[in-house]
Length: 354
Image 1: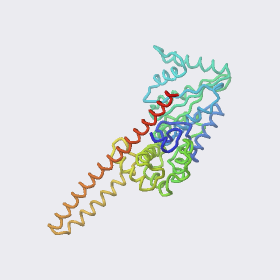
Image 2: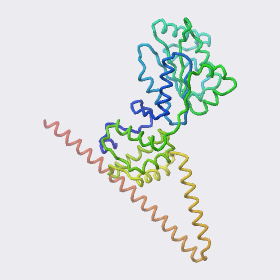
Image 3: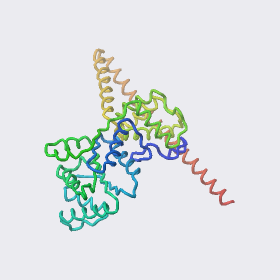
Image 4: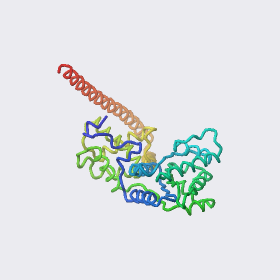
């Protein structure tokens, strides 16, 4: 919708993971290096953990894109609460094998035969398990048992586990000692700091074709980092709305107040919760309100009545202004759509005349 307005080739802040927009902060680059190192070793487990939306899946997809498909068969699994048998069934399906009405022994035999076949053709299998924190301990242990498949003392399958912080608790369980001994490397991703947030935003805009050097004033990034907590997915969520706000208000550059306006809009929407910092903002607002109420108690009864009336009138005025602003934005949006439609019709008519 706003791509043409900002001269972008595509949307730079989509919520779905896109390896084309991979941004290598120091910690993300470290995680990617661990994955690449593990891939070169060809054995053991690599474990990547981090908060929701911090970029674990993007890292995995970025790695898969760099893999030479001629000698590695990479399969990706996004897990739910799968039992060991269900997990084996999903792996069989991802390998292109049938798991229907098979016993556990038969499933293991089919997997081993496929791994041996790949090995004899100078190929190996890489298993990427995303959202691994959803797996029960027994299923994680099943992955360790699969790593025992070997031929000529060489492992036939390798697994990378990516998950939220709960995955660390699972792996640190006393029952998981043998699994821990198979981990080659692990990395815990952290949110961006303010500088990384700025670099991340500019990186994505540049890849989307933006030629503007300073689309955001310098004080915008502190607000963005605080509101989103430095989580990439939440940054994407906020920045997508900021660009839409710019399109509807015919802006090419943004100030701190523009960002705060968008945050205020999103804070009123159930589907657009950004971070815990919003709770902080609400708490600050409540504190200020309580302070004002406490101070008003010192007024006389008449004065207090005037204060309440003034507040009510202010609330009504604010409500009316919000509705006026919303209608103005809607009218601008409709005007843009009508112009775009007229341009398209004119081009179509000219084409028919030719």
